[in-house]
Image (cartoon, rainbow, N blue to C red; front, side, top):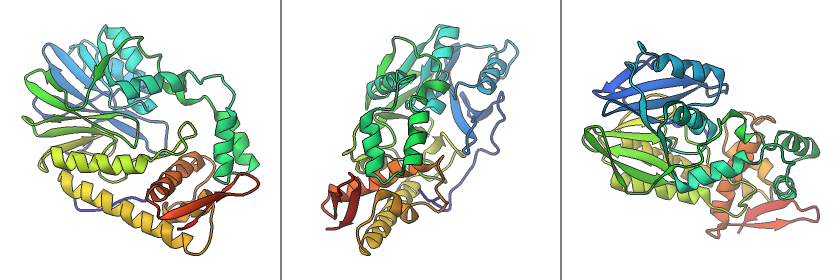
Length: 348
């Protein structure tokens, strides 16, 4: 989605470099790892847990991230030579779960994830080496992709797991509302969906912190997409409902620790702005459809400020379809398929 801009406070100062730490509050450290993407970083968090550190998210499986972890855990490194006790993963995307398998095996600790995230990750990693399924080809043709784009989809299919170290064969399930003692403080699990199936955030009332993962970001909104595995899904509706739940359950005065950009507050103003921004995007979509029937690929201009090239096409298509499905399921637009199996959307 287009970047959202509202006045926010960023009280934690500059981000640490890979292999360094920055203390947020006593016993909670900010780590940052590089990403080989246009979004070039991810924030991770270490929480004091007895004689070690509970880690939140892991970074992508790359040599640069492995080197940074080795520096952090060196006997004289920034983590004081103390080992990880547990690895908490907010959700299944490679920048969050990529080195969970390495960390848990290297240090003999347990992986904590929600069921939906762990199992979906296992399924997607297993696609490595498979041919693109006919359901996926039909899905993207229905959205209006041409043969060149379909050929690229075929070539890239199964690449989800290339930046994920093999997951451990067992894990500890996180549940919504669960309260977990980490060191001296209790943290409550807040599960949402839309960006991923069962995204876990972590709220600590004592420390007034929310480890938010990708569920709430300060300067961008997370990708909320429909995928070929569930073409009639309503992830945007689920995500907006999740934001409303977070607003109800988490106080405004927490310091939000997001996966990207910098720690920020206030939470509620950001949640409300995200909701308003998506409302405006839905209005723009409906305005374009007033002009006549259009395919999903004809509607990117209502949602994205930048040109959508081949690299961005899958994400843009998935997000556009999430908006269209939201409107379809509320009876605000209609869809019909032509003789070639391409979907055309129009106002109801």
